[in-house]
Figure 1 (cartoon, rainbow, N blue to C red):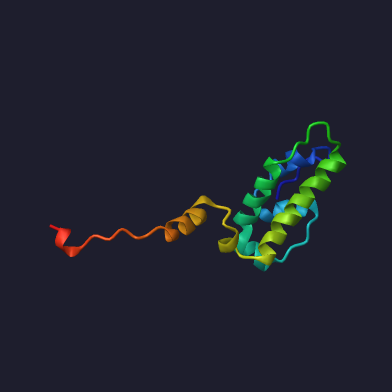
Figure 2 (figure 1 turned 90 degrees about the horizontal axis):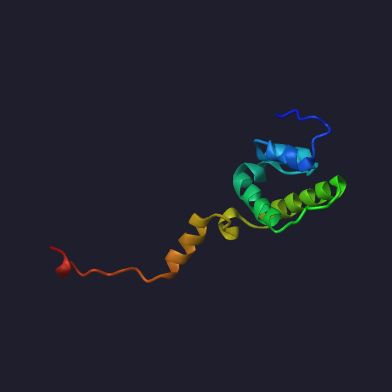
Length: 113
């Protein structure tokens, strides 16, 4: 567990976090360990997607903390309501769906040499 200085901003503290549990702890978000054990990377990836849409320039620390907490809560809620397979935040899962929608290539035995 990282023990950053209390004066460090939340963005700095989050950037040094090394586990999903640290994100939840730093932001004060309650969670079910069973859900986090299954979807930890998916939750953090989704939070990153939400985070990429945010602009924090000029925002006060309490507002930044509240917005980060809301993003983590939403990302977590996404995976409480549905599975990582359903949410498909990673390219490999998106590609798996795209590939299953394509017709399989058929090569007749007579073409094999």
